[in-house]
Image (cartoon, rainbow, N blue to C red; front, side, top):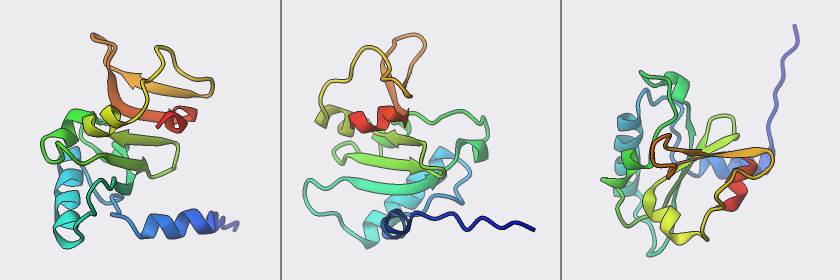
Length: 133
């Protein structure tokens, strides 16, 4: 049969140097793993906590996570977590405070996932919208 060993080598190397989230089954497990990682690998002042591999399809409600899931554990540390396929990222409120203001509409080829009631960014960006951060 056909086996696709698809790998972007440099990206794969960077990914392995960060917390691996692909076995997490909930946002709470992601936060727990990140807290354990930071306890073992303290971040330099001002550094972003970056991880890779979350997949909302493994979460109980199968919905995209929210920045609030990260905020309590990391109120002053910017967090940027890539989805397992590299087509989405999840951030916390501190990261959103540190980047330029987001446009009111989605960029072509991407989405800023927004709360349906407040229209505030939830912290999840897809595809081209990740370039805004």
